[in-house]
Length: 343
Image (cartoon, rainbow, N blue to C red; front, top):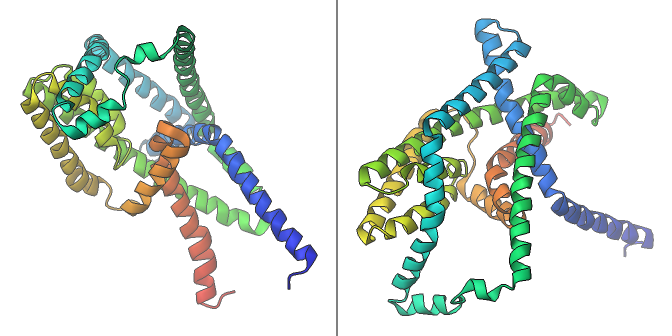
């Protein structure tokens, strides 16, 4: 039988683990904010390191050049597409409710659709009191402000991380025993290379999806092609689930042009996804870390459940980092040494 002290110790450990789980749940937003800042820093640092390695440009100057180029590219896109894109986004806000109403009308044509629609209030506006409406407006306003603040924090913190990564890396390794610090530093550098390779490949893939979607929708004669292309570009950052999230508004708007247009749009999106998944991605990710699709999907579902859309967007790079840490610190440093008899 277990002694009282042993039993009490195990109960205490279990309570600590449960408490840590709930604390992590409450701190998820902060954790994601920190990781997003690190991703931005990795992107900047990758560009600066590349210039230092190829053209002997000092790292600090390279950071400045990368930031200036990023700002210039954003300004160029805004200048070229800003007015029409802004107009299309505004039009989409007006068109989507109409397309949803049309979708409901079409759903009434079958028994399953009627059953689903019976669960939806006829007039959602009447369900909310004026107090609820004002609360929702306030929540939307605060959410918008929160998003702007989060982006600002990610950019500023990312720049600080990128300017002097060695200080933060060495500061983190100080949390480990002296004889493990050099190895931990090597693992962190490996994480950096994994994330930087993944980010560059992902942005190339996103650009291909965004441009192909915009051009394809224009050729089909779809309204709001570049607004929908922007959505496809952003959601291409999320493997597995992202393309389907981007398809939903496109199909709803296409339904207003007729069922044939909705079919053509669906075929276009699936065609682009097939090319991206089986041609573009394998070509640009040959030497990258391979993540099992089922593991990634379950991980995305879990983070999406606990953290919403933010969890979906950042799920893949977090999982890639975890896999590198497990492979290096557990498989190589523990299991393989035990197998070869080094420990």
